[in-house]
View 1 (tube, rainbow, N blue to C red):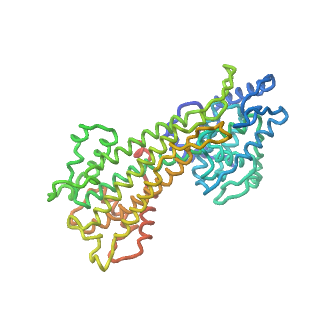
View 2: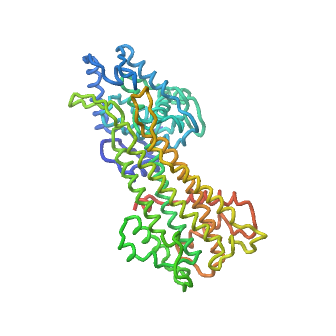
View 3: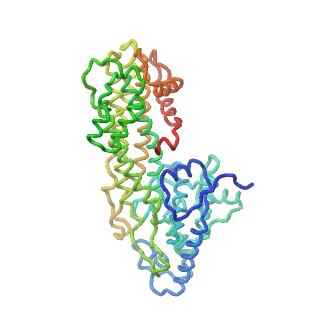
Length: 505
């Protein structure tokens, strides 16, 4: 039965992250545009003719790889060379990555090869597209990439499945790739010269994880402002630090936007307008715009890097048919991404750092709130240990934020003597993003609990969020197992619907 999904045609037209967000989450099918197909065929035909007449070695096409680049390969062995390359490089280790990230890898790899500068056949790209459209998602592992020469091991596992080897995630379970291809009566891809190295060279693993983290962080940034505003209200905070006059005097984009967001969220609130006894608030409340805003600016920088990479060719060598050049360079080197991924991890950790401090202040027994936010502290511990958990997670984030991009290990007998470690930066970032959800969940629990001790109401928008949350995590009257509440609060954050028009406004 033909698909009724909308089709996105892969072409050389610039693709924004917001466009990609829509394509990915609206579950569009993808296909090569006529323009892209022509470019791919043109490049492949040029390469075939070049191989026939070329006597000199061309790296990765009729030579070995890495430090074996000086070993010439006979024409009869060129296909075998590509098969051996994929099999020998499929040595990933550690945990499997989320199949959702693998799906993004498939899209990014298909797009990168579609420019007609890689020398692959249209059928090879169509195999990537077939896997993407049918949710056949290769088993890919966290560890194995140095982030230079591309994400070799992860992309080898991606490619292995296209050859009918290895395993794939399909319909909720991992199966042999050959079995799933047989179900669809789909042949395994038959790699030709250059195709294995084109599939394996590239930054699609670290880029996929970075882009998926940015999608999550757009939503978490949106929620962090709301949770912070709710905490500000529960703590009886002052409105003056959010006045635009302050932020116009120091007009960093994220800072000013955050202050405007908090002002909007507090409109009509009884709590914010009541008379304050205290003259100032601690920094974790007073400096919400400066801290949240800085993290948003860091996210914007990382997104700029990701978007450029999304619209780039990152395999090697690169083929320029019109110029009659095959150039072996270093576009697979992930340093640009590694630096951005490390920077984004730091920014994500700061959202968590300041959140945990607000949680601490809310349970500290200040401003007419009971210690640990229970009616009978002593008999009940209330939210005392929930704050411990947030502190533990924040501390782990600090450990995870040691930059991967300053590290390098020599590989391939010294041929690959500087590597980016961008893949490690990407997997660490994913853990920091996941930890942020836990810390924000605990702050939301704490702010909700604190509001039970306030008579005045907050704004309509924050009240609606509070009411919805209390249906999932009710008031803690007496001590209970808070693990379940934290999980319920995390689920609330994960399931909270935020439209693309809101997060990409």
